[in-house]
Length: 296
Image 1: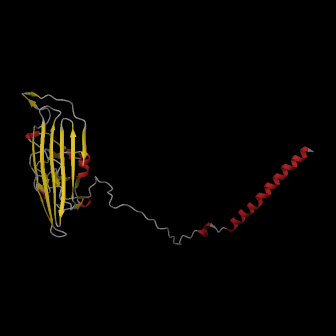
Image 2 (image 1 turned 90 degrees about the vertical axis):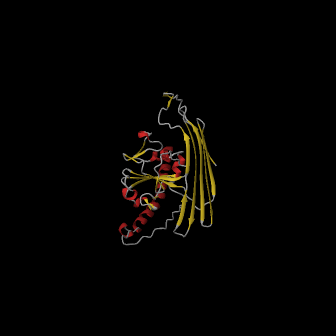
Image 3 (image 1 turned 180 degrees about the vertical axis):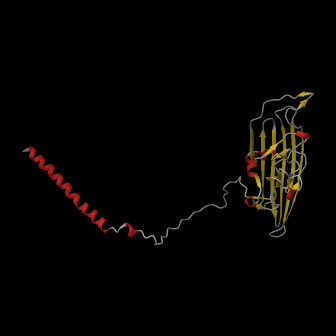
């Protein structure tokens, strides 16, 4: 008896479950019959209008502050680099400051195809080779030839532009390997002052000041430098100072007159390797490895 009752109970449960599923199956069958064919649902000739997609971005935020889009060297006027049919490398002020490049030689280390000599041929100051040719007579400051034998500082430079390849049509005979053009810091119409102080090993001290102001159509900017440093080699030192004022007069909306002045003076002992003292190599110490920079 007990076995028969248990069997009936299980059979009843099975029937109840099956009865519960029958309406659901019938409903799904009805939906399948009512649904239109796929060929009728998708009409290839029907125009589909999607919802508008809005993209917002801050246009004032630079994508890459080290990237330059224009140059004044390739055509003697401000021009997009993509429209100049020559290779041009531009080292901006942001890159110079981020790498603490205190002289032109260090700033140009970012440029390919350029090598820096160290006093070969009895030349003092900057001695640069560009694409295998000496560029000592191919250095310019705002398009004006700058052949002086001195160590060029970066305290007054807004950017350094290197035009690679023969350029005698624009810059005359001698521009075989290319041209190095320094762009002066000019008034921008703002008012403010910025100062930098750097202290490093072997009593390295450097201070720069950049002040700017504007009154109506006249703008003025002043850059000042003082640097005093010893060396990891005995008997070598560098004492340098400079001043670079710049004035701008906006005559019309499309015409302006700019006057730039530069005075740089240096007192030191040239160090192109191991210096000689009393007929023998001077004593050397360890190489400096730490520099502390503060900006105010």
